Length: 333
Picture 1 (cartoon, rainbow, N blue to C red):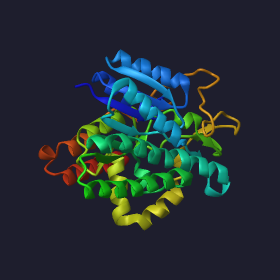
Picture 2: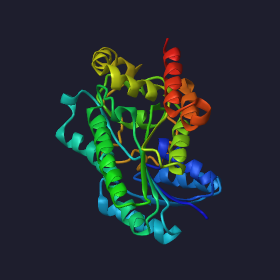
Picture 3: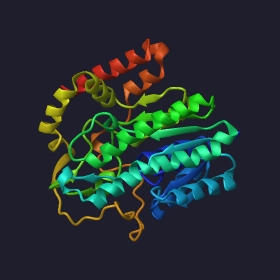
């Protein structure tokens, strides 16, 4: 039976790479994002892989638009089997340099966008008593860093509401599943179009992974939603374990290193285009694809991911995570 998948934020980055993987499996993929050029490129990718694509321009901050997209997806492809929430935006700046309107917008997209996607998915899935929702999270959902207060706050909020929803589904004995995939730093186009007030070009905090690594984690979670949470990347394992045991030390460490580690050496002016309010591919017609500017610095594989997904080989899931953490620490030396 052909799988029907909805992906928000599907025009670039992790969402785009995830759409490509589902397309290669022959799935029906509904693609939600604001940018038309990126959506068209994602649709071509899905169909080139052997799947069927439906591009639906959608701002996930608008619940009525998300619900309408869910209706259109089911009208075209039939019942939704999997819903993947990816869409987000951010502002790179100290908290006191972010306006209330900007903070609100990040929250509406990055947090409420997940709420809206989950609401729309559950409206379809609960009556049928089947379906899977995958929340694409971040290590920053449990360990915040400087210069991304709005994004980190939204990701923390996503963890909170998702746990509540999971408990409610368990209470009613539902067969609908919801899981979270916590991501590391990923080489996506966001660092070229994020609203930034930093003096230098923003970058993901190394080590950096290619979006295909993240996408493989998402697809695996969609296939195995029985686990509450998945971690992708050695650095995610290190970060979340360190947050659990030495959080005060991390505060001091990130206060000292978190500004420079999120910037390259390249000076930038403050007038570059950004996607907080409008997609950057609207007027230019540019399709940015899945990858950002950091291919030469990015890892295409993560041993931690394989170990965490093969607990019988690694011994236990915890052992897999621990081995991943040790690998990451070894790389960092």
